[in-house]
Amino acid sequence: MSDSSEGQRRALLVGINHYYLDDTIGNLQYCVNDVVELDEILSNKLRGDFSTQLLHSEIDDIKQRPTRSNIMALTSLLANNSESNDSILFYFAGHGFEQDGVNYLLPADARENVLSETAISLRWVKETLSRSLARKKFMIMDACHAGAAIGRSQSVHMTRSFHEEMFSEAEGFAVLSSCKMGQLSHDYPETNHGAFSYYLLEGLRGLADRDGDQIITVPDANKYVSQKLREWSLSRGVQQNPTFEYRVSGDFIFVRIPTEGGAELPSKFDIADMAIAPAYDVSYITKTLDDLSFMSFEDINSNRQLFENLRASLSSGDKVTKIKIFLTKFVRTRFSDSEAKERLMSIVASVTELKEVKKWIGNEPLIKQYLLIEFTTSRNFDYAGTMAHIIRNILPVLSDDELREIVGSIEQNDQILNSFKARAYLWSIIDASKYIVSIERYKDLMKLLTG
Image (cartoon, rainbow, N blue to C red; front, side, top):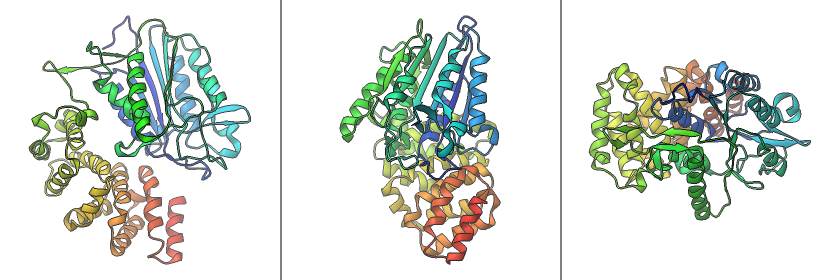
């Protein structure tokens, strides 16, 4: 997508759900989902063509965790390794906080009582990026989340100081914030995303291209997100309005919209609001699972769009009926390569958030037992994290005996216990067992998580 005149396109994407050193810093829910999905779009050669660096709190590799040192080191590299024709993007989804007149972004290893030593000042980020030779610089901040306290604070509204520092004049900058001063950034639980990021992702998949030129600029994305988030906020009785400032010379192309056989690729999120093509009916779901069952690892990796389309299909029309058919077919299908099953499980994790689906699973012994077995026999760290997510979701429909079985598997399976991605969900699973195991065993289980 880029050429020599446009220069290189680089992005650092940071998403933090879990603050693992300080219990006084509230955990978040969907920041990791937000950055993972954004990375898929921006790193796609036909769409964003960005060289991306992804840091998030559910990854096992210590070099990719959103710690203070990692974020600062990679921010410096992002700024210092860019030439004048390059474009750079810094995206942060996590806690932002003002203390003693200083505005901070909180990395995963922050401690509330020593933020000056463990957090990252917003001014440092802005100044570091400002020194870059890159002519086009873009910051996106989703940092003031509803329902997430820090220390004794019950409110993390966007403060005047934080807002002013973020939008202080800087030539060559475009800055987009998830909310205005005095507002909160709200979650959209039905989508497993923050509301701001949901509409940003939706727009970048094609819906922000209102003029049909197959190009989405930064202002195009802002216009789409602002309109959709305003409508969403009114429907929910909340206030959340993105704030945007553009001081970039010329157009800043965010993504392009590729075509396949002359037709626009389907939007992953908004198919429910569009005319559903016959390809996305129930027969499409069963046929896709059949196709995936025969694919090799190489075929699976070259057919990512199949998973995108399947997820989109399950998000449209009569979702619950489709999900039931999908799960019933899924547990009866054997796959030639485990990669297909493991990727499909990430879809299962998202659909089991729905109350109707949880209740249905509770009455389907075959499906429930399949999920329990997959969790207790998890083969790698990432898969253990996905399965822990699913088990956390279906806790309300599990019997005491099933919960005891799960707890036992956590003690005996190092892949589960040592999965950084699983840790956020294991707390909830073990906590649910405190009334069915002895106090001593419950304490021992908690020690395993902190050890």
